[in-house]
Length: 238
Image (tube, rainbow, N blue to C red; front, side):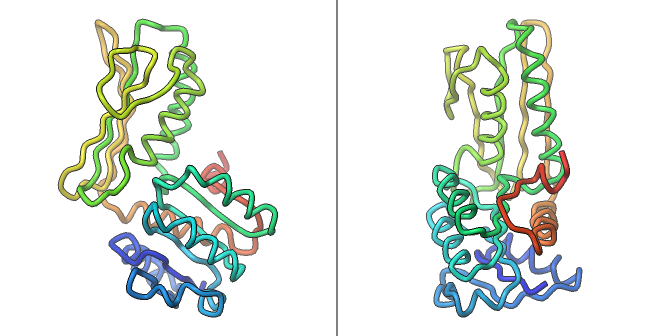
């Protein structure tokens, strides 16, 4: 594949390294110093764009790729208040778009277990639930997109929770998300159900950021010759 990488930071470099090892070619590397390449005539040379930028630039980057009719894989978080707009644009213009808040295979299996567990816990009101997440100090959004995905699935499946807050809470109807930023931690997420007598934890810990890069590249390979909006459930056939 001919790949454009939009957001050539640490993740972009990881994607490039894995792509080259797999025999793909990175023909565009776009960051804040090369935004002049974010135009249809440059982007159109790529078979797919992989977008890991910032919450403030993701929407416009994806729209630029659509203008060049280039399929997009996006892993940027913190901008999804506009995700529905992009999905509608994708469908109305018959574009190709793949979005995931986390490209780790393990995390996406965790998402499925999290939904199932939340449904079970409707029967056991003595257990309160919270989410803890830890990321590197460079991460711009808090809580993380992965934590928000976990929270959203809990709120949909656990009737006693009506909302979430990223701060300490006293109201047991509110799901507490605790966020910590330290060092170069790639990402740790834990859902914990606690009663007076025990704690049940569902946890995932990324050991290296390459796990996310590898997943994003799998997504790029998956959407070649496809049209529409895709998620990790489609890739994993969940």
